[in-house]
Image (cartoon, rainbow, N blue to C red):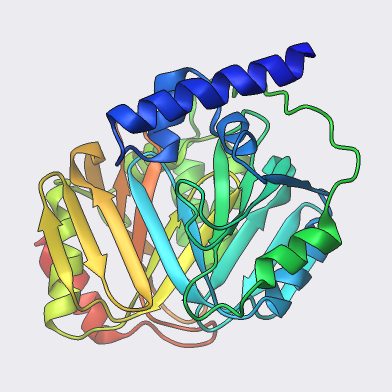
Length: 345
């Protein structure tokens, strides 16, 4: 037996034993317990197939697969949306899915490994396509549902199968850069640039221009543009939007994908440390203990000020962002602005 096969056999054996001991343990958590990457663990599943890293072909194939469930997560929040992959495109390192239901911003430099997992496997009852970064961490997953045509993801795998896959080799993620000291930031220039924003998409280039971390920029911008809130503000925002039947936009992402829900949130279910949205086409699972702080953020645009409530973890990473429902060229919904300002009052 080759070293690779022996490793795979040993991993499969250890995982089978762990599942017997803890049958409800999720794949991501099992990988941590077994001290392997999630990509390696998923690749060890019976029938798992490596796919070619042709991301446009994959997105187009997902469009043909019909209705599915898209999942994007970070350490503290899971975002699940049912729908179709519509209006897919790739331009260099960026990809887009702009359907009414599944709405994604894709950072393809961090898409490295893709796997098809047939139905009947742990964490993949009807089959799935799972994408991982160089460290073997999942950046995006697609699951077949009851509404998915029978065999749709199997046919995708037959078309995109990598006929000569190399063994999955992972490299540790680079540590998060330490923000520069506040004293080294051109705070006056940052505030002027912030006041001169004309589009929300100009915000990230502004951060790069001043070499400032996002959370640091909020702190330095001044209370007119950003105001710190307790972490409970996220839960209160979602609850208020649900109670008022107010359509909102919820952004959850990682360094490979941002997934957006646009619409109302209705069935809100707190369960221990988790705050959940359990609607038919949209689920959100937010670990509230992972939130360290929240911010009310205002950005000027050509359409007027755009307001968001943003949650961060203890490392300064964005957990999720909530906006009012709007399209480019539209002014912000005043009901949303009143809700957000009320949360911050």
